[in-house]
Length: 193
Image 1 (cartoon, rainbow, N blue to C red):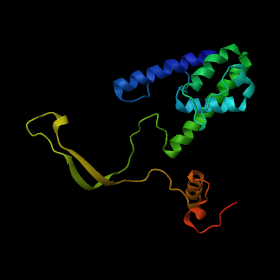
Image 2 (cartoon, rainbow, N blue to C red):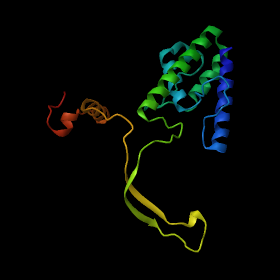
Image 3 (cartoon, one colour):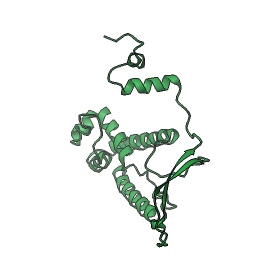
Image 4 (cartoon, one colour):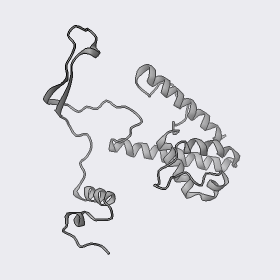
């Protein structure tokens, strides 16, 4: 039954947490056959589903899963997958397929952009130290590594993501600006009215 996948997702989340505590890596050789979508990205995908299917959202009492700023409430995916057990199996399968496909797509996009913060990654930055300054003095009498001096440095690193084009940068600025286009912000465009 599709509703049972929620249990598998919870088990996978717990195993990933335990593995991270032991090995500092959330990935494990143990596979319970489910995606771990009970997180902020899964909440976003679940909210997207509820936005598209308002009838199901109302039936499950999940019509208000975003705040006034559009941010998704925490545990939206857990609430949706928990309450969907009251729905027909075909509807459950539809919901699970939407969440799993949407989650995979979102994670792939975030990974490609280098913005997936669910998993720590080791990056091949080929860092070269340019400058180094002592931030705190160390205690020579104490052999603990925590008593050693700390440093702050400037490094030259390899860029791992593709640089934005001018158009992409302009679009981001426009999107974040307070109603002004990029040109208007620079004072070279005419105000839109």
